Image (cartoon, rainbow, N blue to C red; front, side, top):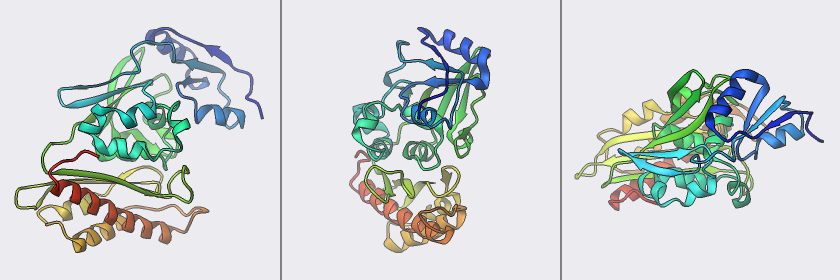
Length: 295
């Protein structure tokens, strides 16, 4: 199929983008990588009247670190993020999650912020963003606001962004150095497909090997990425042990509300969440014990 008729705008400044969004509201869509949007337009699942292409706006394709926060601009490609030395050093779990997104050819064009704003509940990068306590910077003609990752995702393909807002940047707090480990693991039916379960884990250990910080984000089983708070709390003060990971996996599985899909029942997807959480924690702990958190 072909897309419905639309108007194409190619602004050169963010102010022009915000003006288009303010004028056209829900009838406008921002085009960055287009890996999801163009497919939906061709299927006429999305029929925007105005397409606002931001690819000619300078300064949006940068990855920087400032005051312990990694900043990813709206035009940073997923492949760039995946191999970025800055991201690999400071937030390696984000690089690891990025390496699982579709295929390299898709990642060469798709953008990090675009994937987050699309809010596919199965997507890898939103799951990693939630584990990292990341943020999205949104701007419009009304000004700027910062949206915490856990407040960003409202449901499948629904975010806290207003119709006149554009996500201009993702912010990722850098992980502590030393005995901190992280891991992203997922299960897919076939290579390059969206996962049926994905888990991002972050662990920090003290000198005695006890867990002082734990973060677990479970994606692809519910309507949005979800932190497993009970499992995180249960890990504090514990030592690295297979039985500890098993218990945490079971707790995480109880916290989520899996959706039955063609890939399996709710019970099956809950079981996957338990297994993948256990494996992700085990890998994160091994990396923490090595004394470095990078991939």
